[in-house]
Length: 290
Length: 288
Image (tube, rainbow over all chains, first blue to last red; front, side, top):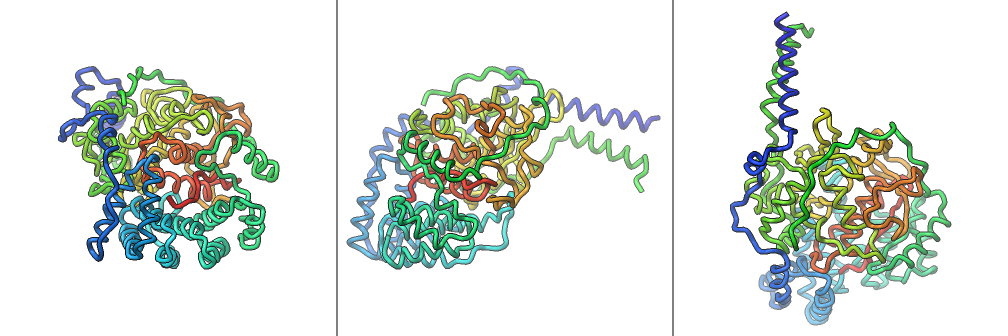
């Protein structure tokens, strides 16, 4: 009998603890549970952005280690740069590519250095290198694409993180080669379409080839000779171009769906009629003014 | 053989364990990715925002202790990285009627905690389970709220998805599981997805892509469905659409690294995760 009572007591305690934790906090408790910081509070973003807009891009100069530092600083600036500064970056990269082959190599070095520790930094560095349209860049992208995809690592949702990370950087390399547009670079892009082991890279190579050929019928015909069996639909895939408006995008989508009725999803299925009853939440104040 | 005595002992230990609360391992707290740092620098230690954000996402000290709850401006830690992503959702989109898939009002309601047409009330936690980028767990007790957890692969700076766009994209993804749960839709038995690989999906958890045009959903109407495939969404799809909106139609000040990472995640996901894929690709493939 006492055992049964002890068991019931344990279950009741567990339930009460959960119930108590879920109760809306009393004002005193809520205040005590607020997050806090050891740093001094900063101003609102609109003030910070005013100051930021006065920053100038660092120069791409020097040789050896000085050049490496200069490129590293440029990557820092570019990573934080805004839409309004994109053309500035492009202009500077174009000028640097014309004047100094060492600068492209420094971008390659910085990108390779970052690729396993800071993916977004590597992505930015490879993107900047691709924008330069440099033969040094072509060599760098070829080296990157030659790296084998890891077959072991951290598995998350069925994918190996290290493999996906490298594949997405190799996809950026495909963008760079397609943009460069030399015969050897284009040949490499088509080889990727046909034979790269990652779907991510093949898909990006197809998209980049098309975009750099103005999505022409000729480009699609060329790709159809290279695309893997089962991936033909990627040649017709709909892209929302940067700055594209609804009319243009929706027309493309309609044409795609007409040409590919097989992509229409089946009717969704219900498990049950509705979910749990709506639990009334407390009213949230609006977010602070930007 | 399990005796009655052992069962009683186990239940008592379970009861005491529930009282004590879990002690969890934290994520890699040594650094932040370039994209996280770049976005962080647009707002710095904006105390007013994180004091709002923890309420908006119904975060509790007990879940975020040791993860930056009391060091909320140390951007190496999970709680600051969480509100960095929340900041992107709250302010980072341009909401162009001409061009965006959905609006801030949609993405906010989908990720934030309060119950609405989008999902029942929920709270945000953090998990060190490397199974997933995120997870949605319906409430067990009637008085509790659903649990939207973001996991360490979204915080460990060495992982490609440890950037504010991907993290915020996961708020959308898991929030949509909340929508499916609220309205009783079946999206499959593999963690709320169809088991894969299947069709054009090469992942272990797959969705359908319910193609729609720009403007098909007024801002605020993402939750709507007519019960057919003509007006429906899946978790990976809302994630892709959010990431595409971050890349293609952000506020002018959103850093380039955040946009590049968002586009990369969107396009990789769109190429791999849809049975009837690929989903849209977004953004020009021009390198910069």
